[in-house]
Image: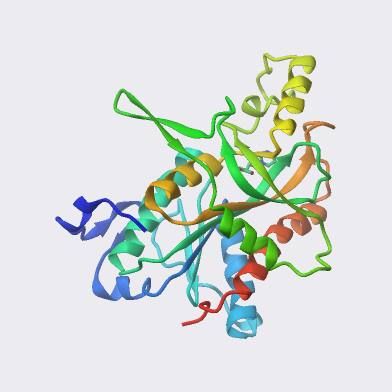
Length: 292
Ligand code: R2B
Ligand code: URA
């Protein structure tokens, strides 16, 4: 892990984005962390923490409610053993803020060896809804493997590829009889859910027609891109700068070759989103440094 050297010249007392005083007592809560699992919603992070408590610590979760360790309504952070289950909100910009905050916090708490995994949902490109995709490369919407941002008025392009060894470890940790399909593939981080992914059911009308969209989907499919979502580029770029192994595990809710709307029932969607959680749990349980 590599961190901004300026941080230690003037140690921070208060972490604004988590509304958290960096007292020794608070930092103690974040020592000996190895894995940070990020999901869009705080509710899903709490659910994952509950499942990990059951699997890792053998806790009867009927009597256990995970405790949120930070004091903001924007993000939630739960801990089980050496795992943090964290929420990141929606979009590259939001996950980027979370990545800075959680990485600073973990640095101040003395952690040096981390892995970051986003666990989420996505729109599939030419695969059955319910398939789980583990990301090898994240692409911007213009199909460049760089996250383009601006430092003041200067454009910077940061590579977005995931850690392939981590991708392989995740796939190798899955049982032979996993009851749903899992593939590794590339992902596109769109700027938004509707027009950025050329949905025709947004409140505003997409400007590209069906023919343009169909050709684009064919083109991305040929690049081994298997899903659209909204955070993989910021995650990949941040973790490449920080030298933190990272990838994304995202279940697909729809096959975009077939339509825009997510038509699965509420129960099916819950089951789908549990699939990507199951994949990360299988991976974490294969590790030897889960409890501490
Ligand atoms: C996938 O799902 C969310 C939108 O519904 C977004 O955060 C993403 O990347
Ligand atoms: N998340 C996305 O960003 N797109 C989808 O189609 C589904 C979930």
